[in-house]
Amino acid sequence: MKQTIAALTLSLLAVPALAKEAPTSLTPASDAAVTYAVQGPGRPEVSMIIAWNRTQDKMRIDAATLPGWVLSEPRENRAFIVVDEQRRYMALPANAAREMEPRLPPGVRLTEAGSDTVAGLPCTVWNFEGAQPGDGDGSICMTDANLLLRLEGKSRSGQGLRMEAQTVATGPQDAARFTVPQGYQQITPQQGAAPAR
Image 1 (cartoon, rainbow, N blue to C red):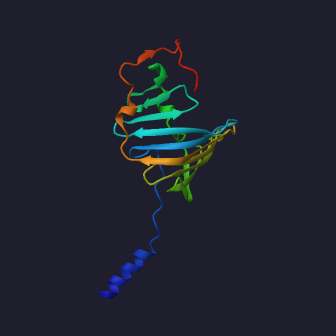
Image 2 (cartoon, helix red, strand yellow):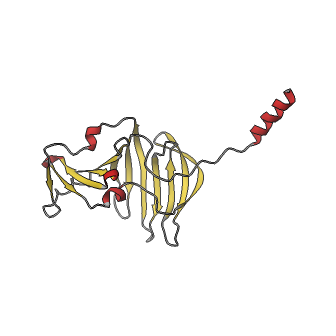
Image 3 (tube, rainbow, N blue to C red):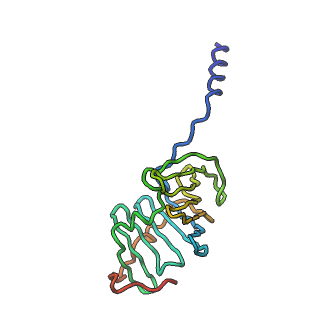
């Protein structure tokens, strides 16, 4: 019996560690708010806060380059920009809710490429390559909870984008921050929104 147990133990130890399952989405599994440093092609670095309320399937984006904050509701396939100073909000194009959320190109190929620590949290590095010639490529670093901590990539035209988490807050997010406040006036694109802050 002892020999059998010993043999079983040795066989288990000899089994290589299972590879992590590649992420299929860049949306976290639970509520979170992340402050990212974002560097776009030919533009100065800016700070952007992306918060997710997973119970309601909503996302909020705050950035100094926007005239207000953006509310994305993928479940309802709608998005709004909300300008608190003017107590107004405006609907964005129907596809905006999906396009605003960080995501991988369709059919992208992911290859595990080690691990790293970003904003004090461990994450797995995945290199990605577009499915078609000329598609973008780069890398992402994801936590086990599917939280995006870093994205580095190049588009088909060779323009680069980098997003890296500076601070991360996990835990329940206030539902009120993911709702257009009552009493705000809805305006049309023709009326326009306030200039960027």
